[in-house]
Image (tube, rainbow, N blue to C red; front, top):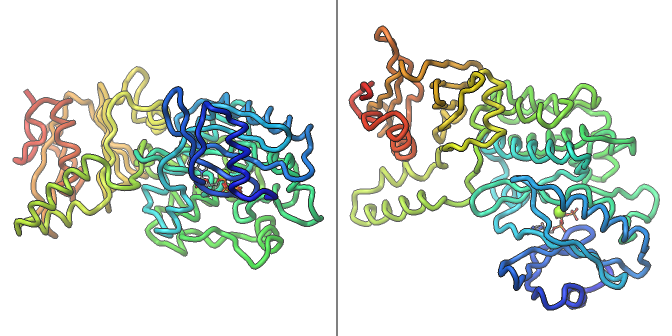
Length: 455
Ligand SMILES: Nc1ncnc2c1ncn2[C@@H]1O[C@H](COP(=O)(O)OP(=O)(O)OP(=O)(O)O)[C@@H](O)[C@H]1O
Ligand SMILES: [Mg+2]
């Protein structure tokens, strides 16, 4: 970048005029800087990405950048960072005003944790896949899917940013017109067709998503090396180490999804991001979750502080420890379309049936999903769906005495049969699921005396 940050901030302030007040620098990437700004009407904080056009700006490329950014600005999806405004100023700077996402990027999360849980990894990947599927439908290929471009808001929703504009911005700022052999992009996340400079399409993004998922699970991307060229060579020719060799608790179906996303030949990958999304949910049913925990959610913070008080009173140590785990997944109607579709795809929902509640506990059992639909109650695991007519099922809980304070959730079925759904629910899981089931099935559900009859 040819301008220093304070000059860039001044230029940006001039460009934006008095509708905005430019604030702190949020971060810098390869060809742009991102500032926080205060918009005065409506009153809100926004993030402004500013590209310094450098000493030799190319007006035609700048026009192209603005055109592409405006195309992207039309994308409206819950997992895409919304763009509010795009513009340029006297051939000096280009800017994009977008929603300020006040959470960590996936890169920051991975720097802190290195690996994420199976459920969190699959959930993030599924939300990214849904965003990509939507953009692909509108002819926009991202081309730069990597952890820096995946942001998480304070509520734990995943938001993908920088759709399709990296190349246009790099061209407009002249970055790409450099010495032969210089690589534009981040080699670790580039598809084989990107690495070799071939024509690419939406399936290239599916490969990059595979890299992202591999890294979340394994703690490192499939290919690394001392130079960009060495990494690109591996992207094009080397076989990745199977993800389960890094981490044996990755369910086999999920490892299969990762491997398929990472095939060299685009024709052997999932052909659409929707297919990839459905495969993720099939492998890890809890990937349907709409949020991932970034920091404690409000109820869990509330419980934690209450428990902290109990702890101070000398009686809360056990409960506090139990509550330290990630929170369960608990989604009420209206269930998001992507989730309903995935459930339909797995045969959980018959035509006309509507999901009303989806639950997965935290921890070891978090690949099992309990679904309450209008007519059906279903237990969804990576390998099977056990579905029952809702009217014929009674729900009960009982303490599971082995291994600390845990609870069992059991479905009582006709002719005295039972289906144990979860064996080791924590107190926090119980706190999430009982009120919902009581609401849906009647007050008796959630009794601690084994399966109970609903009124
Ligand atoms: N909408 C946003 N809200 C809040 N912070 C953001 C937003 N967009 C970007 N950032 C922050 O600004 C930083 C720089 O973003 P930028 O897109 O310029 O670079 P990058 O994605 O890290 O790399 P590259 O230049 O290769 O795209 C990001 O790492 C992120 O922390
Ligand atoms: Mg970015």
